[in-house]
Structures are given as structure tokens and as C-alpha cells.
Length: 446
Image (cartoon, rainbow, N blue to C red; front, side, top):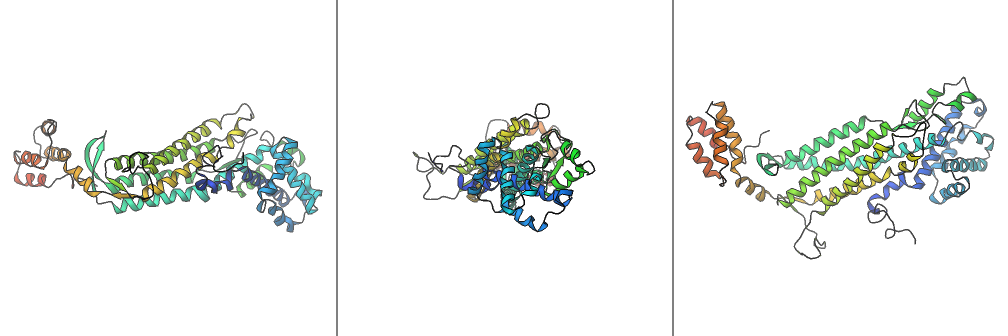
């Protein structure tokens, strides 16, 4: 069966392909081949620039043509790597042989043995994968998140003066403001994005067991530790040292955990907005061509927030597994990280699907001030906190207990109830006047 959006096993490449296809540039098999070739070529160029004695006469004007091997590679050309892999049964060795074929075409086979010189496959994998992850985050995911934070920021500002009944434990609580509640999510996201910006993308580069044994035995007078640091840094990554054969993944796990916290904040926001919609605090713009229910024509479901929540949950589950599994390896290396590492793009893809849905959902929100105000009018009991606090200030006897007796009778508390209560208090006229100014619409704090 030919692969298409209808036959793909994963919805990432099927139903949601239009939202995630941009990530194929970073996480597809073709992308991995291109990143591996890039690291191998850049490493060869770095050896030339030392220069190693045997590479001193290599024509530097060829560097551009070498870089074109990965810059201009097409999926069709990358199939040659897969053909070689069928023979070698080793994906990174196939990359080496593919590059050597290009060296032959360029007439530079003389220097071919310095491709992958002194390296093990994880020097390539543990540099290529974090590099693709870093560039996908910077090019795609972080800009998408910035769009969401910008939208939330605009809503926070637009609705900053609209009072709203708060709900703690699902029960009416001291009033707040709509804009402030959105700003809570904004500052939470901004803080996690700040923390994320401080984390570095790690890479392992150190030979078969991390000690650069082969490099040192071949060229004992070269400072290979500094070379490795400089080379990895030139790719925008931070070299982990010392390591075993593989990157120890602790810093990569920190990145996954940070992204998971961002996703969890967005889940929290999705659930709150879903609830506000159910309370009719928000309506949704109607697309006349859409169907909310196959049975109930009237329904306009908050499907965008539900879709976002579901995909964020899948992303978090994957990120949790990645951050818990990858740092654990038997002795100097086992192969369990290899297959797991190929899934780094999946949580980012589900996150991207979620962000797309969230962006659409936020764009459909219409605030319903009438419903919000009506809820405040139904809940005059929430000013009890304000009244008893002022009575405490005035050293009124048992103010908390007095308000508790008033508001927990099971009867509705309205404006008139509160007004009668204030009138009956044994306090000065000025204090009564102060208390009368307190309403559910004005008692919103800072």
C-alpha cells in the first residue's frame, strides 16, 4: 500500500500532516541522513583547519563543494545511503561510504580515509540529533509558542478591567478579572521559556568510549580535547566531557522536562478555557459550514481546546519517557537509546498540532460580559471576605463568625441581604459607607 495521508500509521504523518510537515526537515530519515553528512563533512573540514599534516595540502577552495554534499542533497540522492546500508547493515558507516563516493567524484579520494577519522557512530548520532532538535526548536517550535504567548498577552491586556467571579474548588470565591487570569498563564509560560533559553543543547564527541583513544594514538601532540570542544561549539552545541561511548543525555532530559512543563501549562489553560466556555463566559465564533455534533445541530463544541489538550498529553508522555530512559545505559553503552532517539521529533510534532489547535481556538473566543456579570450578581456572598476583613480592622467582635453565620444559611445572598446586614452593624456611619461601596464587581484586588 502506497504511503499517503490516508495510509500513514501515525496521525502526525496522516491526518495532521499539513500541520507537521515542516518538521520533516529536521526529523525524517532523510533529515537524519543530511544532518549526519553535515557533521561528517564539517568534521573533515575542521581536521583540515588544524591542519593534520596529511591534510595540509588539501585545497581549501573545495570546502564549498564538500558542504554542497549536504546542502544540496535530495531525498532521491539520499536513497543511495539506504542502498549502501543494505550491504553494511550499519547506517552511519553507510554515510561514510556515501561521502567517500563523492570524494572519488571530486577527485580527492587521496584524503578519503580522514572521513570519520577516529570516530564512532555515536560521535555522529549524538551530534546530529541534538543539532536537528536545536534547529527545529529555534526555527519552528519556539516561534509557534511565541505566537501563543503574544495572543495570550493581547487578551490579558484587552480584558484587564473586566471583573469575573473566581472559582476555588469549583465554588464562588473572591472576584478576579478576566485579563489577570490570562496573565497568570502568560507569566508562567514566559518563565518556562526563560528557563529553556538558559539550557544548552549537548553533544558527545570523543571516539569509541569517549576518551579519544584513536585520535591520541595517531597524533599524540594535538590537544584533541580542545579540538572537540571547539568543533562541537562551532555547530552551536555544548560538548559533554567526559562521557562513555554515548552522550549521557542528562542535559537533553532537562530540555525535555522543560518543554513538558510548558505543555502542562498549556493543558491547564485549555481546561480552564473549556470550563469558561461551558459556563458561557465565552462564546465561540461560528463557522456555518462546521458541524458540532452528528446528532445535535445546535452544538458548537470547544473542540480546538480538546484537541490541543489531547495532543499535549501525548507529547508529555513521550517527553517523560525520553527524559527518563535516555540517561540510563548499561556500562559504556547499550543500543536502547538508538531507537528511542529517533522519536525526538514526535513530541514536538504533537506539540505543534496542539499549538495550531490552540491558536485557532483562542482566535474564536468571544467574551460574554453579560454572563460574567450575571454570575457576579448571583454571588454577593463573595464580598463577605471584604466585610469581615474591614470589621477585623475595626476590632469588631467575632467578624469571621458573624459573616459565616450570615452566608452559610443555605439561602441566596443578594445585594439586599448584604445591604441589610451592613445597616444592622454596630459601626460608624463612615465604616458602613465604606462597606456599601464593596460589590462583587469592584472587589477585584490588584
